[in-house]
Image (cartoon, rainbow, N blue to C red; front, side, top):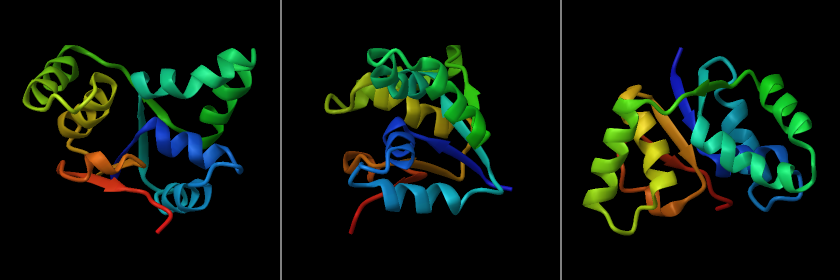
Length: 130
């Protein structure tokens, strides 16, 4: 069983049929149905923003639970690795660094994202329409 870390961009696209990346994101998630899927709590919070605006956090939480995602807390070790990543790259935003750091600290087989800027990092697989 592989360990897969999901970025919010993949989760959002997977759960929103109107998203332009819905099909490739869903294909990527389905391709790891037998693997351990971890969602950093920072990415979970990012995913919940639109639901919070709509007053639908409960429904969004249920969607995550149905997928069987494991919420991965951001602890000291991940926070420190994210800080190191961010310090080496001014173009990398802290929320992105937190997800990439989870992949590193957990020694994930893959970090799934739709953000092409992450392609240079080890473990990262970019989900795209093409």
